[in-house]
Every structure is written in structure tokens, then in C-alpha cells.
Length: 238
Length: 286
Image (tube, rainbow over all chains, first blue to last red; front, side, top):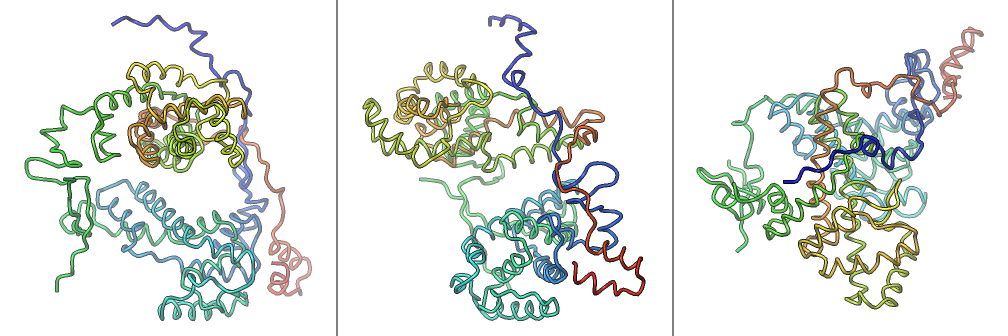
């Protein structure tokens, strides 16, 4: 094989990125760097830590403003309703499989976070029309987001009861919504109006329970894992 | 009580005692030692083996696609996560960022969609200049951004220049989608001052191999992973990696100015006026 000619060092070190100028610094827009961080302008250690709780901080981080007392209380209720995700769901099942395989704990958390982000993405995909309806602020709740049965209605009764002391009005709750539609409507009313804000809040709410469930799995417990759930039926094309 | 089985069909694989199956092939007898890595990748994406000349072209492409400068954003992301010292999470992050990204392997999927739409509208009239312009103009009226066109920071995609002779040598430059891609290049260049990039070339080649846009996106991801491995491994091994925390001087804050929260303000007022009801004032301002 012919050996290629050696690279001219000058030529080798020049390329398109050498011909352009770029900024020298990263841009921070939410958190100030350094030993005394501020979040959207508020001193975290001397102010927020003394006067606000993690729900307020979640809302501040995602929206740029501290929530009202009513909105923070309602947000706390909605995030609590959203928190549990059982191992029946792919997000937690995947994290549990990672633990079973002996994956590093950081990566178990990473798998859970990816799974939960995917779960939230699908939820928001399925509720695109609901978000548009909430933004329009009027009319009848689209039929596909109405309660599918007594379980949905029972959840909504509990949700309304939990929200009552907060004093926050969530008009969608009067229109017999399904569970997910009801919870998204509360988050929306609390100021999380953009898809990305809703996805981030849902993942944040669910991550602790998902990780906790995964970490209960015994590492290398392969013989006790239901490997045939579901049972894959291998088929070959004729 | 036994639960009814939940069944799901799969064409992918089965674990046997002495031989395994993979998309209808016996692994040891038919694949091991007989199929290249690119060929196995194609089998995994398509569910069928590609003819040897097509698999060889994928090997050529993987080489030509090797633009792996650590400053390139997806690779920089990989290096940044690897700064904590583990390469696998960094690799996972590098793959994850490709989902629907405007640059990187997944862009091939969108470029394939462009070609499919234009190819159908053109209906084989590659050499009818007037018709080509009509179809391209109609597409451009509806789309501000044309996937597969654009060569950031340079006038042409040097990977494409290097790769085209491979395409010609393997005789893949006379096929329908390739001809569509060739036909629209000049009108789009004229209209948008934008050169084609390797994304649309890969899309044309793979459409001519019978791949769907999703399969094209997936195959592109596979063909470009070697670069992510390189940066995940190298960065994870760097002692005291500067990316783990960039020195403060290199971060410019452009967010909200310092401010006092409503409750902190109320607390300050309460300190000054001890008789004030702090909680009710917090409710009013909070």
C-alpha cells in the first residue's frame, strides 16, 4: 500500500473553525456561577433557602418568577399526584433492569431520567390539543380528554378536595376531565404553560419514586426476574 | 393461578443452545466471520442483509463521515459528560442528543423526507429542467429550511467531495433517488445560496437501497458512533478535566439582576416594624 504524504503541520492545523471568531465565554442565563449562586436573580442561600420550598424553586427555575402562594400550594398538590410511577411503566421497569444488571447507580438514575422524559414526551404528545384548549381559555373540554370511568372521576374528586384549601381556580376540573388532563390543567394554571416546562416538572416529580423503586431490585437477581414478560415469539420471514 | 401469557412477536433474535438466530440467520454459521460490522449494522436496521457492494459503500461512508473535531457540538457534549470520568454515560448522552437534532446523524432522516416528497412530485423527470424548477420552487415556497442543504462555516462539504468517487466507483450514481438529488442541487443552490451536504447524499444512497427515512436515521446514527466513542473515551481519561467545571471567569452571566424575594422583603419590613403581621404581608406580596 502506498504511504500517504506526511501532513504539512500548517495545513493540518487549519480548517473552517480557525477562520471564524467565536465568543470566549459560556453564557449563563439562570444561575450565576460561583460560590454564592443566585437563581433568576434571587440569592439562593440567604433568601430562597430561608423563605421558599422546593416546589417554589421548581416553579421559579422553570418560569423565571416565584409562584403566588395559591399557585405554589396547587403545584405541590399536582406534583404529589404525579409523583408515583409503578414498575408496570416502561420508565421504571427500565431503571429496575439497569439495577438488576449491576449498572452504576448514576447510570440507573440516568436510565430512569431518560425513561421518565420519554414517558412525559408521550403524555404531552397525547395532550397537544388539551394544551391548545387551555391556551384558548374557553369552550368545552375536547371529548378525548374527558373521564374514561369511575377511577378518573374518583381521582378528580380527590384532586379537587386537595386543591380546595389552595383557593386556586382550575376551570378544566369542572368539565369531567380524565386524570392526566386534570393534572396537566392544574400545572398549566400554576404557570407551567409551555410543553418543555410541563415535561420538566413531570420528570422532576417522578424521578425520586422511579429511582427508589429501581434501587430496591437486587443486583444480578436474574433468576427472579420475569424474563418472559412479555413472551417474545420469534418469527422469521418465509 | 397462572396468568395468561402476554405475547409479542419479534423478528430480531432468539437464544438457542448451540446456535443463535438473528433476523432469520444462523449467527455462527451464516454471520460470524462472513458479515462486516457495517453489514451487521444494516441487518439490524433493515432486518435483511444488504448486498455486499451496498455494505461496502456503508463502510466507505463511515470513513468519509469521520469529521470528529472535539469542538463540534455533539462531540463536545459527549466530552463534557465524559469529564466526570465515565465513558458509557457520555456515549449515551451523545446518542441521546441526536434525537430530532438539526445537526448530526438523525438529520439524514429529514433529508430523506425531502427527497421522497420531491422525488414523487418529479416522477422521473430528472432531465426536464423546467419541471425540476417548478417542483423545487413549490417545495421552497412551503419550506424555509431544506434539510440536506447547508454547509456551516465553509462553502462546500469536504466529506462529500471525498465520498463521491466511492459512490461512482461502486456504480451507485445512476439510481432514481440519486438522480433526483442531482437534479435539485443546482436549483436549490441558486435559490437559497446553499450547497448540498453529505446528509442528502447519504439519504439518496440509502433510499436507493430501499431504506425508509427512519431506517436511514438509524443507520446514520450507527455509522457515526465511532466518533462518539473516541471522545467519550479520551475525555473520560483526562485527569482534572477542565470541562468538569469551567473557571468562573469563562462564564458570562446575562440573566436577571440581583433581587430580593417578596418574603425576604416582608421579613425585612417585619424586622424594622416588629408589630407587622409577617405572614399576611407575605401572602399579599407573594
